[in-house]
Length: 198
Image 1 (spheres, rainbow, N blue to C red):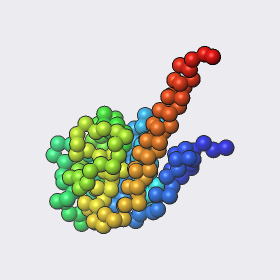
Image 2 (image 1 turned 180 degrees about the horizontal axis):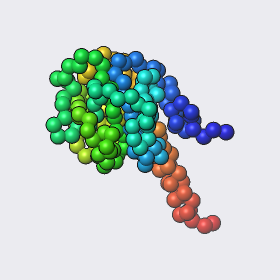
Image 3 (image 1 turned 120 degrees about the vertical axis):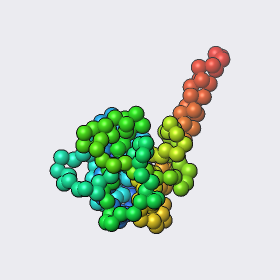
Image 4 (image 1 turned 90 degrees about the vertical axis):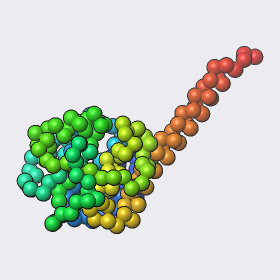
């Protein structure tokens, strides 16, 4: 029996596929995930990838068969990164999105294939919905939220992404439910240990 859903890669009791209706966008999104991040259950890049039919997903580096395009940008808040809210593109660009912890993302953007790409960023329009990871700065967001913010900055129509963002709330709800369950289990075990003998 399969332990994980083949669609969202989450354990079957925590499947998120109901939130992953396809979202059409003119921007080609390429996710580049750090190898260590690929083993973590709370990552959001694969969830975003599954909802964006034209996106690409690679672990460790850019896909080897990715054709070169001059209008390719790296979504990363590096010093001097251009604000997507003020940038106008002649045609929909390609957006490369590093994924991992922030230290892992900084390592990814130093890869030769990514280091020469011009960086773009966004100013968040909403508070983060993903408290499972605390970013080093309050203006930083999870990978899924970052992609949504970037696409909204370039194309507008934020309502397209509400269902997808709901996946973050579902992940948080699962975490909270497990905390309650584990806490109840710990209290039950404690009561069994401390019950007086008769």
